[in-house]
Length: 508
Ligand SMILES: NC(=O)C1=CN([C@@H]2O[C@H](COP(=O)(O)OP(=O)(O)OC[C@H]3O[C@@H](n4cnc5c(N)ncnc54)[C@H](O)[C@@H]3O)[C@@H](O)[C@H]2O)[C@@H](O)CC1
Ligand SMILES: [K+]
Image (tube, rainbow, N blue to C red; front, side):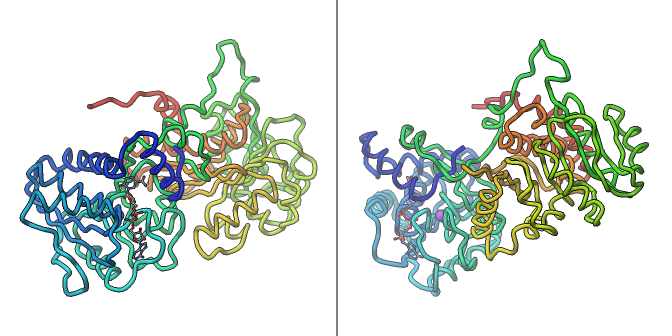
């Protein structure tokens, strides 16, 4: 799903009005109608009082239409107009009058702190103060009102976006942003819904398709795209009936050190469970029995050194080399890595201590084979590219880095971001139970397994991250978050492939 910018959505908005021969008021009615349906289907006529805070632009206009529809369906509604300026939008004014025409309980104007209403824990609040039109931080008493709402303990539903949040940029100051429990957003999720600094303001979100101009949306390129099941399914490559293990490639996993052999076992298992035809593991000598016992399907080659890597000698050509898990960053391992980089042109995935070695010796970055995949978590990224001021700055730095070294970078997080030169792919699978030791090793194995099957490195990264998250979601369904271990993610990879093609039950 493409993630459009506020500017693109505004353009789509005006084009739709022109091409569909409707007024902007009609479009507002349509958008608000979809919000009403969602609320109505959940509240089912409940007699709870709904407090709606409307701004004076079109987000506020949406709020007024929702208020009218709720009132017409018998809900108890109290509308407050956050009257921060006299520049009311045309559609706000039209809907202000329409609302006043159907009730004697007219909206209450809030003009300063003295007008704040009482909001209690358990209240239901709709936030329709600001949407994509916000172009500067919320200040003064409006910011105090946001705090007042946030502190109330009420359930907060934001319309289009939490008021105070921008669509693309992290605000300099996070005071004055609504902390929503749920956000119903129009046409496209907004980029800030996925950034670590701002995602917590959004709560859960749902996208409502308000039918903006299809042609414009289809031909408009976006900087970022959200990857859910529908998008991931399209990335899957069928296995042919007439095939053998050689058709699915040979993954070589290189890493491990004394006490950290488990990491490469996890990666190798995940590569095989993702469909690699063959998998070899290169480890220090101490890994030999452990790997052969834990994973009889893998072949094992060992270093001359017992406890750490020192020289990576192999007498075959794998399809992908996955390097770094549990390898440590000692001089011997660093030399072995440097020699490997100098000698190979094979596609590579670099993870964990492989990334730390690159950070320790930046000259090695120039030796990376083209379109290698790097999979850092935030700390590893910071070592690699240096500190950043905020999430937008971080993204700019990553983009500069991947262009300079011609690599693909997966930044792991609650929503992992896959950076390619062309686009950012934001992953929408996975859960907090996956924050567990070894989950990253499994991810490297999954992506390597796909690369060995000749998935393009960008697709392998995007698809691998999605599958890994989906396997974690399946694990969570069976055992809850806390009991998920890295091995459980791997155990659910098969289920994740099946889940990709399971049709959702249509309850409508
Ligand atoms: N673009 C679309 O696709 C559609 C938009 N709709 C609604 O319209 C919203 C956008 O409406 P608007 O463009 O009127 O803008 P908003 O309602 O988001 O903001 C109101 C106005 O306040 C002013 N403003 C910005 N920052 C301010 C600040 N810090 N303090 C005081 N005033 C400030 C701006 O001039 C802006 O026009 C969307 O978020 C959505 O809710 C829907 O009605 C349906 C279709
Ligand atoms: K809002």
